[in-house]
Image 1: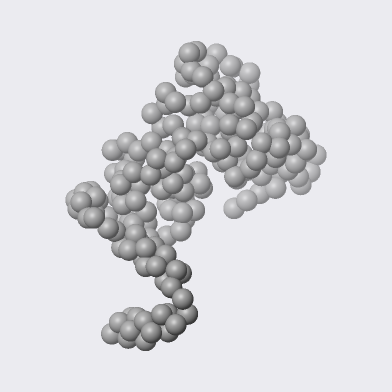
Image 2: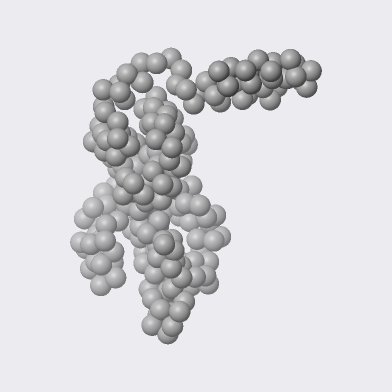
Length: 215
């Protein structure tokens, strides 16, 4: 549940601390605000506003920054207490602005692999939206969206965790990998075809589709 950190004086002090920590996390990852905006549902101006304490930061928003920047709760405590050395050890000194060398890195450009599409198919079969799926997997609320949109690298361990959380087996996952078209891909292509048809053609095929759907 989203909680606003603005209820009393002690909470107001906490907002300032949250603002300081999210800025320090970004700087420790050597990201400019415009680069950080690639991975967050905020533009660089909103990130600057939050970092400078000119906006309320909810616990949910703070956890999103924490997850996107890749810091654990223990890391956050080190940042809060000023123990920077404990944090800096996990950052390679030669790394540039991006998180290129991280195994669990996020990409500025999409790399939607077949594995991403199969995970999307399984989520849809399970009847979950991306936020609910992220919650079930105990990820940050946007993580499944990042994965399905090809912005996060996938390891075998992470794939297995997601598949089994959805209640499926890795055997099914590998079977779906071999299918030329997944159900949601067929649906998307059919929708694309239907949108390009004129009204007369739609009226011709509508009864046929309706009959097939009801059979």
